[in-house]
Structures are given as C-alpha cells and as structure tokens.
Image (tube, rainbow, N blue to C red):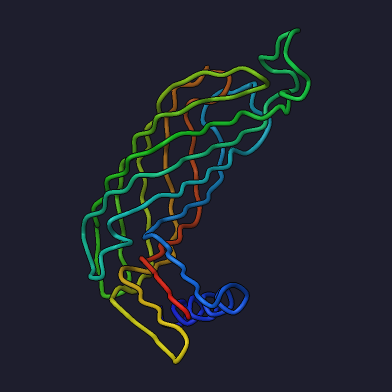
Length: 212
C-alpha cells in the first residue's frame, strides 16, 4: 500500500512540475476484473472465446478495515467473435460490420465472505446487469445475471505519506484475486446466453495526492 502511495506522490509532483506548480490526483475506490471463457451449450454463431471486463466502485475497496460484505456498481463489457456477417442486413454500413458481439452496460453486485482470514478472503457474489448488445450494426437491450466465487489476497488500512513537495493519503483496501463465475444473459440461443468465465481482479483503495 505504501508503495502505491509513493507512486502517487511521484506522479503528482511530476504533474505539478510540468504545469503551473500545483497538481492533484484522485483515484476512487474501485474493483477491476478481466476474464475469459467459453459459452455453454450450443452456440453456432460464436466462433471463439468470450472476454469480459468489469470496472466499478465497491464498498470493500473503500472500507479501511476487513469487511464480510460488499456492494458495488459499475460498467460491464463482454466481447465475443461471431461468424462473418451474422445479423447484418443489406443496408448495414460496412464500417459497422466487425463480426464481434459487443455487450455494454451497468451492473449491481452484492457479495459476502465464505471464509475470511487476516490477509486472504473468499467471496460468494451475485450480480445483475442491464445491457445493450451490438452486433454487425444491429442493437438490442436486455439483462444478465451472474454468480461468482473469488479469492483475494488483500491489505486494508489508512495510510499517508508526505515530503516537502507533496502529500498523498489512501483509505481502503488493495487486493489481487482470482475468480470463476457462471452467467446468463438475454441473448439469442445461437449467441450463447450461458457462459463460464475465469479471470483476475484488482481492488484499489481511495487515493488522493496533492503537490505544490
């Protein structure tokens, strides 16, 4: 955690020296996840692995003490390659045809710990999503849901570092983790509404830095 704060001090001081003599950085408490995995069942229109990115603000990232409960909101994005020309129409602009299913939307996530130790904890979480899907110029709206099992190594606290030019503080939790999840989204059967995903997660505390 202190190494992260020191990096913020260096970055803030660099901004200040390059600008008008004053700099500031604020990083919100966040969780960022990236994973990949297959669709489950027959999905003839899907030609490769599904990729997933989530980024949002979470209570367990902000709270500076170990917690057994988490709630978060944020962005979810999913990308899957599809067969060439899937769903495209004769009138579709060629620039809109990239043969990838894009899912973009918002999520709400609730989680509780199944096991919690000093610096390691295991979470069970459920997530609901509101999604817009785009594939070769066609757009639709729908929803999704997922259940996840994850484990992370974490450190929590409130820390501050200062020198003669800069000040930085951090409150919350820094963590690295691994997860597996099963999801269902309101997609056509040939696009694979059910999927299994595994990936890595990064939890970032609230960090602020000032330099003058």
